[in-house]
Image (cartoon, rainbow, N blue to C red; front, top):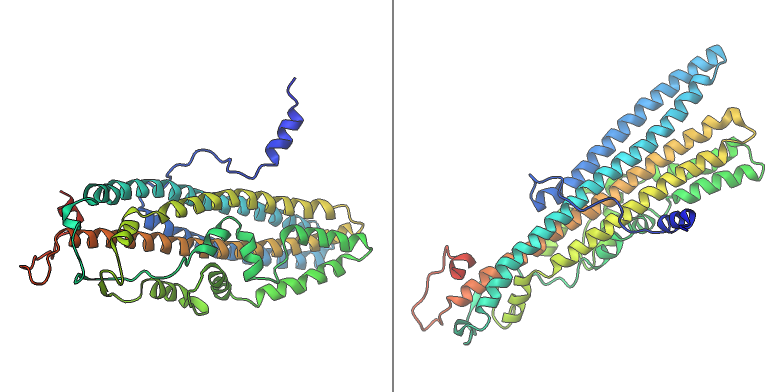
Length: 385
């Protein structure tokens, strides 16, 4: 006989992706557009969250004044609890939208990988043994980018599988959601009153407010990038692009590139890594949403039966502020991850395109003593055809 309880326990213990088939829900966007749009969406969501919080605070002020005038606190308590449910709904809505973008990016990456293999790989397979490549290129010089950074995205792969670990590094004073709920319950269990429990956490929340969103993003970026020198504030994305690409320079065969390095560029192997990392991010998003909702539920459950029942709205109001701030930090974190991942896609694509261009020049190459061949305007498709 099937033990349903054991089956449910087994399914709840998993952390894999379980939100349906991967599909492209933004078919009108290119891969680069979709990857770049996610950080923009997260910024818009933060604005919405701020507006929602301000509106709620205004309502609380009005309800508090009414309670002072009439002695009836029911309106205040109802507003606080309603806001708590709104925050929970906002968590669901934001995570759903992030996952929608990530699923589309994964699907588009599959198309991009196939496209690279249909052009770059076929181009390489067709010409790798060609006599046109079977001679010396000792005086071949091409103009392009060095692409010489050593594995700059290694940390990105790690943190895409665990965004909350990045939050711990970038914002070390931010309490974990489950710890926040447990600490409030523990303070009350020891006999502390509600005001003491609230005061304990208000200090943590004030520390979080001292760090601007731009500084948080820069902190996250520094953790995500290996060997890339970036500044604080809003200029780190420009610094990243400048560091990765650098200036176009003359590249000499044998010194700056070889046939093997051209092959590596052509095959675009890092696109597989990028897609694998996005799959890990999708798994992490599912887990983090579940854990964040569970922490919110735990906070409310652990504190609703306190003897200071009339002061419960104070605790719920504190929870509203905490989860709003944590959600904003999480959006900053995933926004930076997505921005750098988008840059990584463009970086790998640029390498593939440069590999095609170099191979085209190699296939039409003549030594300086030979009659020169004008390859201006010729691309890899001309050569391939």
